[in-house]
Image (cartoon, rainbow, N blue to C red; front, side, top):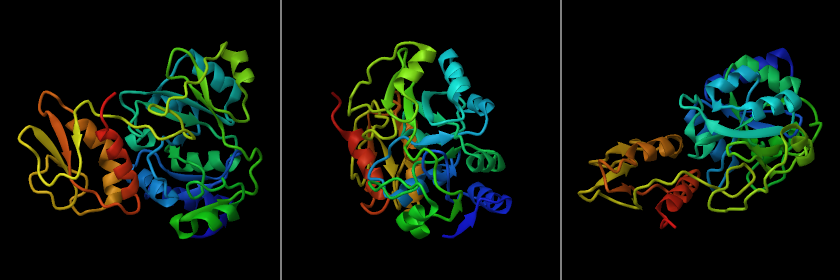
Length: 314
């Protein structure tokens, strides 16, 4: 880990690392973000591992330009009006992922939605343009600790788990962004922030009350929520039953798909949601058997996700 000034050279170095799958902390107007290429599942998995997140929560994806949205989400007139009013700025909007969404499913924690923001910070926007890819970037601190508003906060919290820190000085707002869910007919604020509900309502009309549903939270800052297969999921399987597909890990003879043949939990995290979706085919199988995944590092998050997937359907 090293800290560089927010010079053109520092931004260029950060962009190079991000394109190579590295993690780079950078300043925004809210807090410092831990950035990774949102289109690279392994880079996104590294974010969860670096933060030590106990589960896969949706991550906010940062963009530099409005025309990037078409490659990520389905927008509507409400989004357009709000983006015109508040972007760049501390407002995150949740939209439905488009069919050709370029972002990894891991940024959405397996949901069919994606959280998007355009930061109001010259360094952040310059970095995004230099990478020319959307960046997943939760706060650059260990999970459960105070969000960082200075570069040194990032270094103190994450150390060598981040490849580079771009020092752009203290954050102007110092509070995480407002999160607004636009994926449903009635918009709702899921996380309060610098952009108030009253300001949002002045643009798009009355907002719905946010549903407090631990089983289906949709936002960063809420409890974890994940795509649940329609088929039953059986954990810690050494082999599949005749009517099951086997999701393997490491040495898994007969696996239908394998999260990581070499036993790499980072690779497994990056592939988890896509492989669960691929195996969730009632016409082919009656269940999904899952090989054991180690309870260490990001393996804790993988197992958290799998426990939820295997829970009895309500």
